[in-house]
Amino acid sequence: MTASAFSLSEGYMTAAFRVTEGDVVIGGIHGPTRHYFCDYCKSWLYTAPENVPDFVNVRTTLFDDPRREPPFVECYVGEALPWVHTGAGHSYDKLPAMEEWPALIQQFAAQNAAAMEDTNP
Image (cartoon, rainbow, N blue to C red; front, side, top):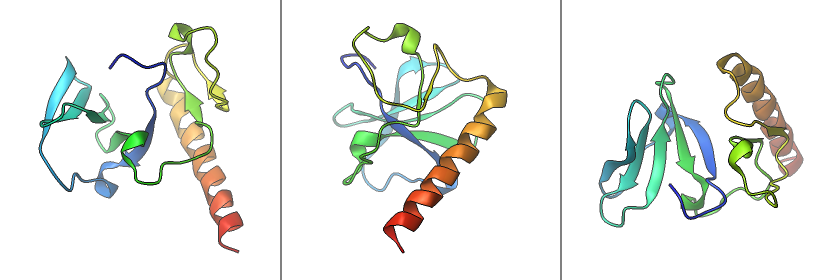
């Protein structure tokens, strides 16, 4: 979980996510938040956050066609290198408070719906 200025991920409901090939193991920090890695190459694949049972963060770089727009939310900017700027619309020194997530998710969903309408007239 080091060696980069970024850790990009996309959030998905667990019902919409599945590993289709290979085996995964828990790596990194062994706590209530579980970080899953490829058992063969040890690449970080996804995270199951603590206290959010129906949600996973999937590493963006795993997708054949990753998103091209800037991140929607950036977290832990208090630990960022001073020259790092992602262009995210929402920035937090650590994580957003739990009560902020519903509004952020709603905004993100609305933004995605508008983008889908623009690409599928």
